[in-house]
Image (spheres, each protein chain N blue to C red):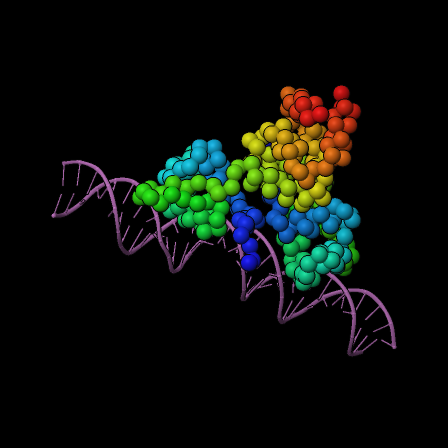
Length: 129
Length: 129
DNA sequence: TGTATCGTACGAAAAACATCGTACCTTTAG
DNA sequence: CTAAAGGTACGATGTTTTTCGTACGATACA
């Protein structure tokens, strides 16, 4: 047989799609209404725009939904971490030819990375020994 | 007067634009022909597509060019590092709410980050003391 | 000198993304 | 029962990004 494992390469979410994912990651499975309200805390979006977007996300297999009630509940198919890892991986490959340490150096050299952040990173590394 | 300093926020390069930038970063100032050839090592692109893309990049102020010869030479306006830092910053803000250490953890947890990479990072941190 | 080659300019089509209006179905309160 | 409120479906439109065809100017060289 060809394959029985879940197809692993979901299409890369677009910008608007990411916004929606972030709401779902932060607040868990939600209705369109809820997501749209959250989005509107940051910028104006029409309800049906968000609805459409979430329907597309569902078509793409990035979200699934519980249709048992009229108010459908949307849920990310992949865990937050997994998706982020995927995006990060792509980012590292694209900009740093896959070198994580190169990215690191940039991160540490960036003035916007606070001393506190750096300390946290060191602690993290120590705890990994 | 309004401003005499160089406008600092160049528009975010798109995907296709990044491909071109990477060639210029890697090989230095180049002609369209050269860039296009490089791109075609990875995927098929028409010469005029690349040309157009590079003209747009120039309009946007991301590239500048030397037109003194018929074969124009294109050069990134901003240094590679600066642009990457900008992109990285956006990435961290978008996906990790600005927390570099969060990104780090993901980087370190990623199986694709080799032991060797981790060692490099530690060395880097130590040298920063 | 004329024709093949290699370059730029640029409009426009194609594709990808994002937004919205309208139709229509369900639920609920009166 | 019915009207209002709130939900989904989905085509149409707008925008941005990407790709390409065509026109035309420079150069080289037979």
